Image 1 (cartoon, one colour):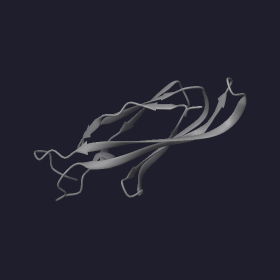
Image 2 (cartoon, rainbow, N blue to C red):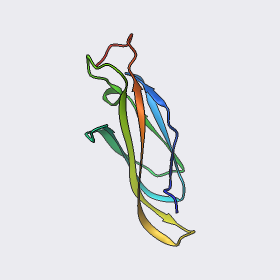
Image 3 (tube, rainbow, N blue to C red):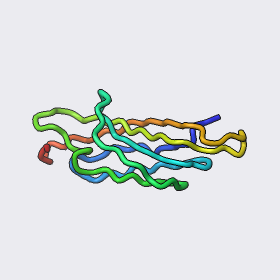
Amino acid sequence: MTCPVDFLELCADKKGTYIINVALNGIVNDFAWKVSDEYGTEISSDTETPALSIDVLLSDAVLGIPAGYRGDIRRVFTVSGTYNSVLYSFNNKPYTAETNFFIKNYIGVPST
């Protein structure tokens, strides 16, 4: 049995806008997401109405890089909730999935 979540992974731009598309397989009852730094500190989170595909729009502080930091920044994107499976005959089974994305630290774009 697989997790009911698929991600499209790309790199985000510093101080830009980044959309993570989450494809949900099965009957999802609830959907929550959060973005953390690589040490687990939560930066942003929210809940969405379940659908077959959800676009999570990230911007502002989520895509910021501290002044003086050199290199790209890794962020961790986590989703969780519950879903039903007709194939395996269960309801309200919890799911969690996680992926990473990187924020490109362009030299010509000022840090936050």
